Length: 247
Image (cartoon, rainbow, N blue to C red; front, side):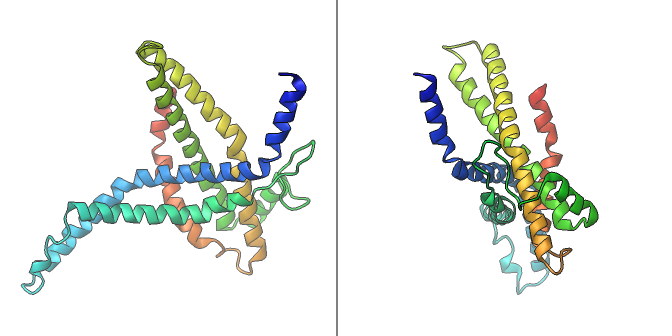
């Protein structure tokens, strides 16, 4: 195949960049949010179990309500916890991942992110410094945590898939483990450098535009920030799992 043929193929797929880049950013953030929801899933289950024990104790104090004790078993408690985790995850996706779909780029020689005509990182950060509203501070932070968690999930998928495919007939287990980890680290690096900064920039732009358009910028996006920050913090506290990847 000639060089011109490869260039033609590249231009063909590049023409669809307007579609797959926003979808890629959305998927990366959503995967990170899902990872965070998995982290809090067990904690929610323990909270539901604690509440169940508390209510059972209160119901047992009266003969009129004693029949309701132990009406909720372990299966139902698990379903309740998973339902809460799923609802939480979808709500955070709505506030944090969906805005990434509005990402856009100029299809030109110098491909740049389109904010407003004269917007840059510097002007956005200058407004954050001048008016550090909760949305301007929280949204880029939680997005950064989620995209990092999403990239880590991608790397673990690559590692496990390659290890299963290589071990045995292709390579011994110790060699397969090293190769799988190398490719997983490479995949994580590619995802971070190609998508992570774009997702954070889009989040900062979205937060800034919402605050500029609002009469009460300090209250803008409050629900999204309140819902997303604990999930991002929970994922961040699990960072020792990521550190083990590099050992």
